[in-house]
Length: 162
Image (tube, rainbow, N blue to C red; front, side, top):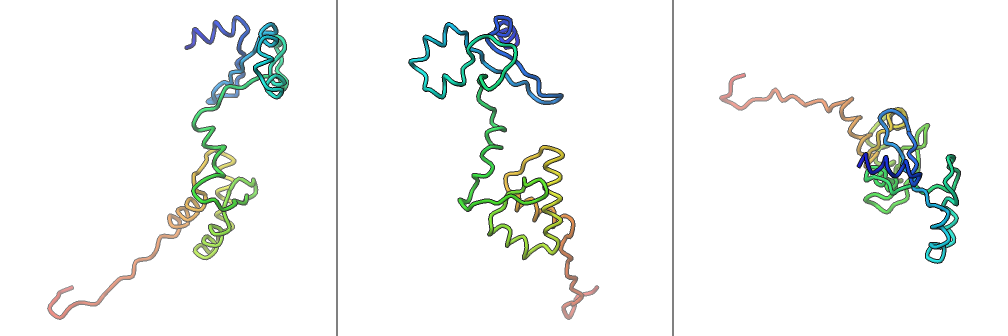
């Protein structure tokens, strides 16, 4: 794969853009000018608008991105999960999505619910981590922070010893 990508890059058919340490490179496909005229009749107006006309080193809006990986697709579909209720953004970074029902459930079960929403929002923004269900995460964190106290039973039966 590395050899094939190196050959394509040498032939100026693709462009690799680094995103940073620990992040995957983005690979953009370039279409040579001579192939654009041939494919124009097969592409829609929107598709031809996104095709690069020549082999440029700079990539404005004319570059074409390869399809994303599963994690990226899942991140984009985060708002469309389980329930079909509309989700509203909460938190300082507006990245905690909750439905009205989930928010009401959190309000009733967690006394300092606003702090947990802010905590989750800040954590997700700083680490880039995503959760499938933000309400479940907040409730789980609250249970970990404040475990339910066990009621001790000091009663015994008639012939039991303590």
